[in-house]
Each structure stands twice: as structure tokens, then as C-alpha cells.
Length: 103
Length: 103
DNA sequence: CATCTATTTTACTATTTTGTAAAATAGTTA
DNA sequence: TAACTATTTTACAAAATAGTAAAATAGATG
Image 1 (cartoon, rainbow over the protein chains, first blue to last red):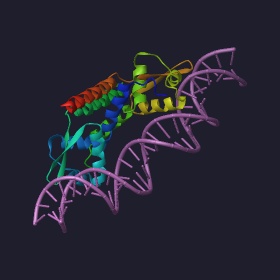
Image 2 (tube, each protein chain N blue to C red):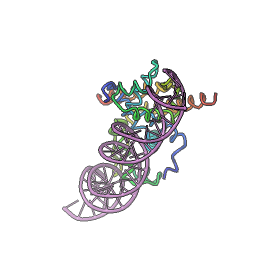
Image 3 (cartoon, rainbow over the protein chains, first blue to last red):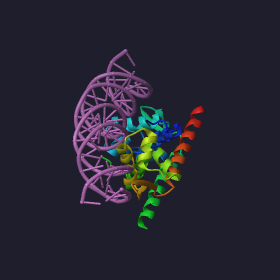
């Protein structure tokens, strides 16, 4: 099983998986232009610190963000902005599908 | 919880989730240019028909493929080729991350 | 119509994901 | 150094994912 599946297909799936959660897409967009800590994000989403922290650790393990401390707070930063190309492309796929569906 | 998360962020996550599995990426690429049935794909991957069928139903529910019967066989077809833009973009994100990592 | 074939669905299992609450940790500050 | 604050980690529970095996289904064919 899985033998014919290429390494690249597995790696692509890992990146896609890390981004394929609405909370994580939200977090990525929040930290894009703002300096906002885990604590504030947890309040905004009305979720536990632990949950937000775990979402960031998924993003960190995928290499999409890294952490930076300032005083008591930790501010996650984007490794590269190109992650939003992925979000944008998924929007385009969604639109394309719905266009075809209407035919 | 989840109130600040926009509908678009949720929809994007649904598309990304459907593609975020190596078996499904493999299946999409297999049906891209070949006419290949569930049965043959199951043999290639050494997996049960049921497993392949379920992966296709995930792709179908996301609107990414539709089915077409020819005799006894069912051949899944891509709704739109743009789904590969997503796979390609995830590759670019992966490369971008690793380039930054090396610095 | 009866049967055959391919696919889907169902029942089940194991694993992963996603959340909470609370303990542990790391770093700051009095 | 002691205490405080923010974050992470751990232990746990519920839900979702991904697989198998076998029953059910749909359509093709003798």
C-alpha cells in the first residue's frame, strides 16, 4: 500500500493539511499584518490558550510560522507570505467549481 | 467560539481539507490524463475498493470530481484542472519555506 | 429474468484531530 | 530570589478520518 505514491505528493499533502483548518487560516490572516499574541487570539476566538497554542504548533511543525518573544508575550510570525497564495488558490478552485456547477 | 471566523475561511478550509491527503492527490493525478477505474486504482495502491471509493466520495462531496459510467466501470473525472494549481502552489510554499530555513 | 461485475455502503476498528482544564515551564519584573 | 504572566504541555474526552471485510446496489449481459 502507498508504494506508488510519490514523496512529493506526501509533502504537498502535509502542507495542505496544516492549512486546511478554518481556525488556522484565521490565525494566519490575523498575524499577517498585526502584532497579536496567543493570549489575545484566544480571547478573540473565545477558545482556551492551549487550543490556540496547539494550532500554532501545527503551523510551526509545518514550517509555516516561527515564534518571537517580546516581554512576556509570544508573537508568531509568518515564514513566508506565499502561504496566502494557497488560501487564494483554494478560493479560485471554489469559484471555478461553482461556475461549472451552474452550467 | 468561531464567531470571528469568516465563511470564506471555512469554505477555503473545506477545499484544502479535501485535497490534503496523499492518496487523494495521487488519485487526482491518476485520473488527470488517463481513463482509469476505481478497480484498477485499488489494485495499483493495493487497497480495498471501499477505501478508494470513500476517497472519491470525499473529492466528490467537495465538488472536485464527478463520476461517469462506461459499461460496468465508473470513471471519475475532474470538475476542473485548476485543482492542480493548488497542488502546485503547495509545492511552491514547501520550496519557499525550505529556502528560508537554509538562511 | 438471472446472473455477473464493479462500485458503494455499512459495521467495525484504530488512529488522528480538536477541544478543555490544569499542571509545568520560561521568561520578566519587583 | 520570589512572584507574576504568558505560553506550552499533559491528561483526558469527543468527533472525524482512514482503513478492512462483507453486504447491498446498480447496471450490463447471457
